[in-house]
Length: 68
Image (tube, one colour):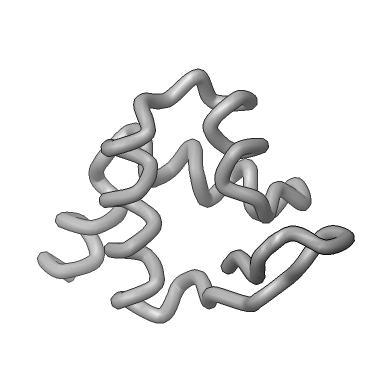
């Protein structure tokens, strides 16, 4: 319980999860929709991936580099 409360007790984490449930999947889109600082979003996403609540998947648009 303590681990879940520690991870999900943060306001930003809950908002990020909500956006992903609504279909948000790209870093820049999440950042714009939530108006969240880049560093906070990056840290929260890493924590969610580490906790296996979210997963990274590669994608590429056109000739751009591969992103996750």
